[in-house]
Image (tube, rainbow over all chains, first blue to last red; front, side):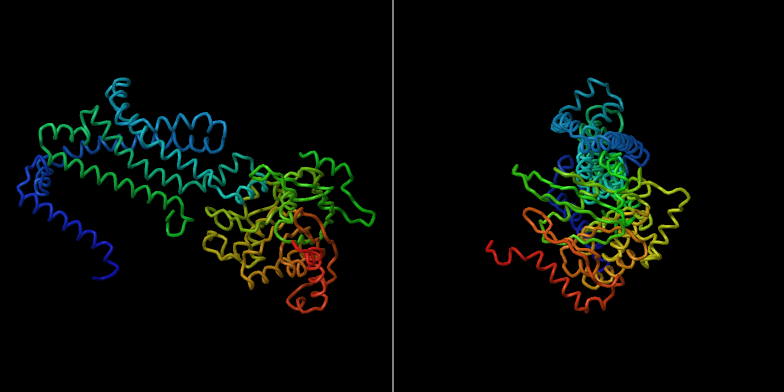
Length: 254
Length: 279
């Protein structure tokens, strides 16, 4: 096999093999559809649900994911910078923030619905609760990681503390922040689905709940697969955006 | 404005009868650090030293002798615990226009191009009216033979090229005083020698006061007009003498018999007392 194609072809072959094995086992042992659907019935379910229905629900979920992620980033990045820059703020807020992160979000989701209603807001709160923390911590870590000699340079050229943060520590923290974004965006997908479980009348999470209550497991699996594709795509997109805004990094890697 | 600056200004710029002027003045400076375990470490002990304008002074000594600490106190990165460090720069100058630093690592900002790095001190320090700093940056790059790399990122440059950029960055605001903290110690021997002669040439053409910290005895003799030898534990001055070599230095300087004599004097200054003593 050509060595340059191998990294692409090998996982595809493995994937095809696993799907085939799955199909053969479920058919061979006559596994009931509602326990583990066959790959062919999942494809059939996708066709049955149809493109228009799936895109409507996927779009609703995507809206929650992206809005929630953007809110998280807008809250978490400045907060992370502040925590890193200000000892007082860090001492006052950090234990509290750790506590909010320690709350199992799935447990709090129904409470959020009771408090703020069943609309988009409830789902956005759930998403933000999951994804803001990793972004904030990565930002603070990146700021605190700024090399001492670079900060010394900033001091000697006459930059104030906030100027040093803006021109040295923050640019230095960008790869860290993007690591936070990658964790945060995957968390946002989870948050959006959890939000839809407890309060929604559209979205892929809602569709999963509705399908499973009808024992239509193949339809639920279709939703799960679409969610996985959304998650991977957003993750990769984050990396691409990072490469675009940091042309100084060799080969666009962090 | 720092109080110490004002005091220095009050002293009529510390001009001597023969017309020479002080650039940096250490008045009985002691610097004490708090170690991690709470003990106090005397890094610099009672250093009294005057550095004249346009002088190229090497601070040489073993690690732990406080030479870098002394340099950092001039840059304002460390405050003396006792005594006073004064910089006789023109009033009101700030940042790299007053005192510019070249660190051991090039410390270029990786997200800025070479040109962007050169212009970084311009954002904060005192600018002279009517100077086109973009043009000046290009001239400085041409001086060190890097004009083609103006738009390159630091990661695309070799270590020697990076340190050349750092020297240009230190010169961008045309400071009177240049502080260099073992700037060539991370370079390979050939690049180091090349840059040493280049720095000497820059000193000859620009007439900057240079305070150069090194642990290399031959480097101190090759570069400096005056050598201050320091000893460790606590950091203090052991010897202070003029280098009696031609102002123009090149590879042939290394072969002069005086060169070896000077290196020996530095070596004696460093090892002199401790050589016979069991430690």
